[in-house]
Image (cartoon, rainbow, N blue to C red; front, top):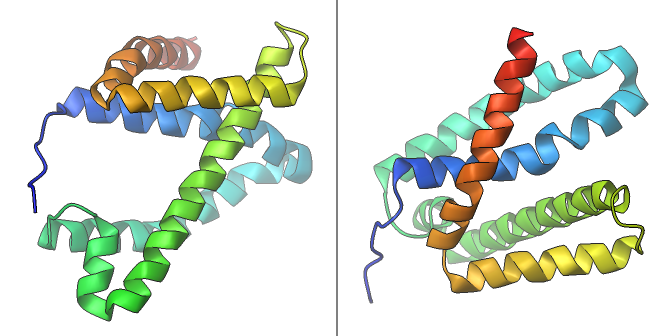
Amino acid sequence: MAELRRELSFFDVFCIASGAMISSGLFILPGLAHAKAGPAVILSYFIAGLLSVAGMLSIAEMTTAMPKAGGDCYTVIRSMGPAIGTVAGLLSWFSLSMKSAFALVGMSVFTILLIPLDIHIIAVAFCLVFLFINLIGIDSPGLTASPAIGKYVSKMVNEILR
């Protein structure tokens, strides 16, 4: 089996991960949560963060103990067997699919403010753009995400220091 090459720098990985978190997790979800929970959304985020720490630390420990391609799915297969590993892989894929769909809908809602088209057309267009970027290779998202992440981080810092 061919070995994977490590070609991404720390900055590339930071930009890709930050872009995934910022897209829906920072700009879209808080507004929806605030509409439902009101000011209690701060407490809700705090409780959710505390509950996710145990899983986050467990996955970090397992993937550093067994640093192989496949990440957490590899460690689940090694520790619990291939059947549970398959379920874990499918659940991981499903959660990423839902996160991607949520981000596409969020971007489409904001784009409607600029371009008055059907939300489905805009979402499909964004999906095709991101599909094309990923078909080119992972280096391109690192390069395309870098300017956007720099802009987002500078805007956040500006708002905090204001």
